[in-house]
Image 1 (cartoon, rainbow, N blue to C red):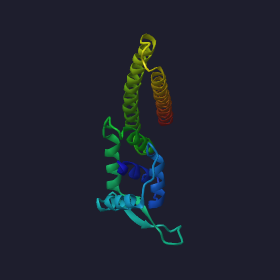
Image 2 (cartoon, one colour; image 1 turned 30 degrees about the horizontal axis):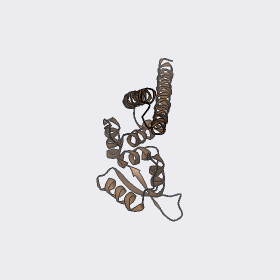
Image 3 (cartoon, rainbow, N blue to C red; image 1 turned 135 degrees about the horizontal axis):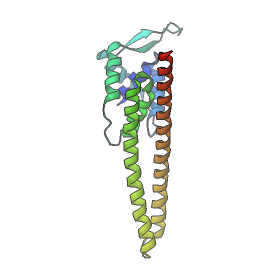
Image 4 (cartoon, one colour; image 1 turned 90 degrees about the horizontal axis):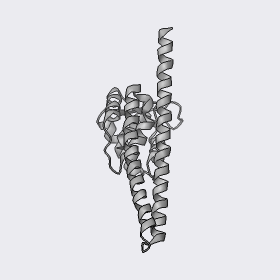
Length: 191
């Protein structure tokens, strides 16, 4: 899973292991710390597979090495970007990793990733709304029900619904920007 983010970030520029770790930590959902004991073996594994190599950073007075993506790494990155995302506990993190790497793939792939994310979020939204409706009926129809529990269950579902709606709004905005970029490119090519 981390391989996708690391390779995606490296398509933009070479980076130290420390910087990659910070980016990885900030991209995880929920956010958590990544130890050097996880990060550096992962970088070694990517290097052993030929996806990255380490080069001297000429700008660093301590001759620090930075990770650099190889042609094989770019191919691997594109394969990972095109892979379906399983609907499991890692889903949100993987989509976030893909979003970080969107500049490294074509617009068709970008649109497919957003469409997949939209479908998953719409499914979740439907489930949350249905459960909320069911709980509201219980609240309205059953005077013996534990009302404080139901109220907080409904509030929790309202948060999940609001988050899904915000994500769907964000997806729509991204898709509009991709379409505008496509039209701009087409206009430039016809000139």
